[in-house]
Image (cartoon, rainbow, N blue to C red; front, side, top):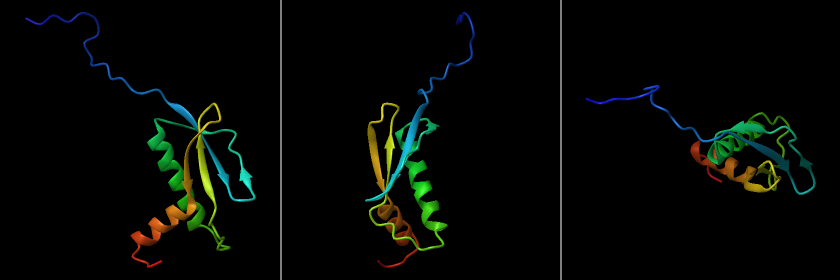
Length: 101
């Protein structure tokens, strides 16, 4: 017979949540994110950045030239972990819609 002491419910281990900062920059402008977003991992942070870029592009009523714009994903120490280019997201959106570039 199996004997289990204490709480018999399965203990699920979750990775610690981390705060990521999303600094938006062009060649001449930097918008620093001072509050950040708490997410589960770097992959979630990347998805967040891609979503943000997609929304900037999608709701751009002035047809901004997004070449050279990027989001730098940073950690609590200020270290840049990943850079996501607006142009890469824009290209993927065009490819997904069947447009030629």
